[in-house]
Image (cartoon, rainbow, N blue to C red; front, top):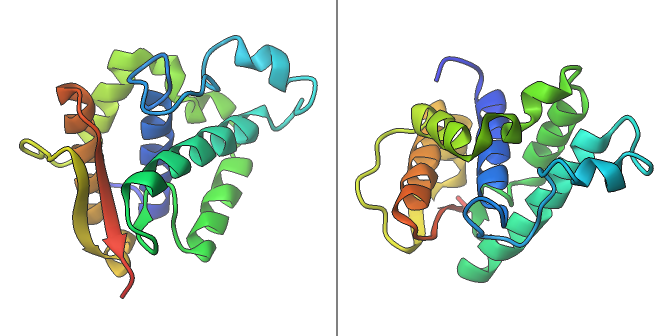
Amino acid sequence: MHSDPLSDLLKVRLLVGYLGEIDQFGWWKTSFYQPASQAFLAPIFPRTGHVAKYHGVAEAARLVHDESLSVGSYHLFRLPEELEHDLHTAIAGTEDRTSQDASMHGKDGALEILRAIGEAFISPADGPISLGEIKELRTSHAIAQMAGIYAAAFQRGIKAFPYLSRA
């Protein structure tokens, strides 16, 4: 990956969030990135519907991850407060909302993008996978590892949850 780690992290979170929805791989029971969701979001969030989608999917994914990981673990959808704030600011500040919509690529396209971002990961285990300490997340290498694990898990039809520990 050649962009900054925050941008990479946001992109991976958006792709995994979309791919985990019920109409793709069904890891969580949301449909925020389906075309019909715009009809119920637009009246309430006319200018920030993309932010509402992002937070809705992130919360659903956070709950699923939290059920599979130990308390105190960090993962793609539960990060330190300052990083969560930075991600919110990044998604809220985007002018081109369509570039933040992983669903525009479709299931196969989004999976291919996630695979391209990620490092090849051979046979991820079903369940939690430790990636070390949270300080590692500030590097594109850790984000690429995470993307590779998710891409391989979706492709194999299993649920893998990469996580990071507190320092």
